[in-house]
Length: 551
Image (cartoon, rainbow, N blue to C red):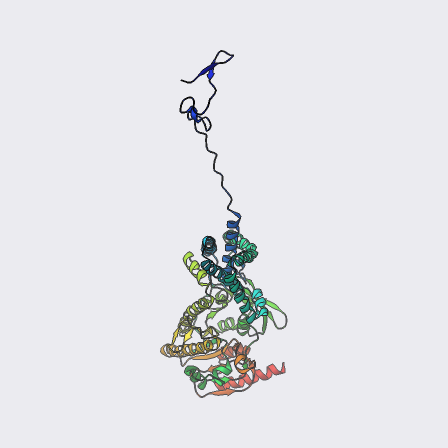
């Protein structure tokens, strides 16, 4: 029993606690607490901010992840040309895949950094530092490939200088892993504002896509009347088909039997010169028949053309070879590359299909899964470009031949992205392949072989459809091969120009120099019946050349 004492108010109170050895067992714990007292409520656990090292690691990993997906970021967020050059519209699934890819790769990198922190063996730590340095260099290389500004800086340093920097960084990582890892994190932190802006902009794009305007354009529609005659024209324009390499200085071992056969039966010119400029300048010039010096996308469905005289006009508002052919009563069709022909010229066409350039569309997808796959594939740029290009060439070649042998159309324009490198064809197996890494020169020669094969399939298709004796075939190019000066030491601006009449016949050489802009008026003269054979065509070209010289 514990001792009780009286208090002045007449009540009793517990006796003061004595030494640890006195009283009951509960009272012996007075130096801790009375076991009979209720337990104190534990304070609520507060969320603790991650350690400073973890925060910096996470930001650095997010920065490197953003640099790795530079191609996808540039294509979807900054959208050069306001989506004018894109076939696949930007939708929420592609944006969601983009954000998930960046965050997912950053999380994987963060786990890797924490694993490196736990390594104690010096040899393994050195190897981990080298691996981290390799990842940093790879992410910077993705930025270099995507952005021309960064590429110009690295070009100024030069290949030997870049190689020396890479060797120096990897050697420092191997020799002093801990300081090297700190320096790498500091370099990655420099790009952290870009990572923050990228994530914020991607999230904002969800709202913009939901509220953004929908551009309207005229869809192609076939004519509902028969052509005034049985004349037909198939106009085939290749990318970078070079006159000198194709016919005059062909590499040994490269056989082009179909192009040689076509030349033996055609009017051919060895001094034809295309309009100066890239594809988006050259093609509108050829189609309108007017010299174009610059272009600028106006919206998703139109292109502003600047002509040589300084005047500007929307491409869709300009008369062109297709609108004029339809005025004559001939329906028109177009299968093309790089430019959205159905959106711009839909009112002048009875049928149109196109595929975008791999320079503008690599990371999009109609579905979430497709976008996810394409964005990861963009991390292997050489293989991804060849994969996409080979797919699109196969699709365009099939569409081109099926459209050319459709007798409803009196004028068919085919614009194909070959033989421009990279190489996507294997001459040995005669198959399209994304694994042709033989270099620009051999890749170009391989693509020449697939261009020759397409010409042969086109002619055989016309013969099977019994349209060979009605169809004129015109073959030309947007420009010569830009790298041809590496082989002949000079720039040669000539492109092939072949004009085969329906009945074929002997080759007729035209040695006058002229611009392929004349093709616009030449085709209309054929459809009107003013030109009936290669002799008439040669006289017409000589007359046009004289008129151009006087002007």
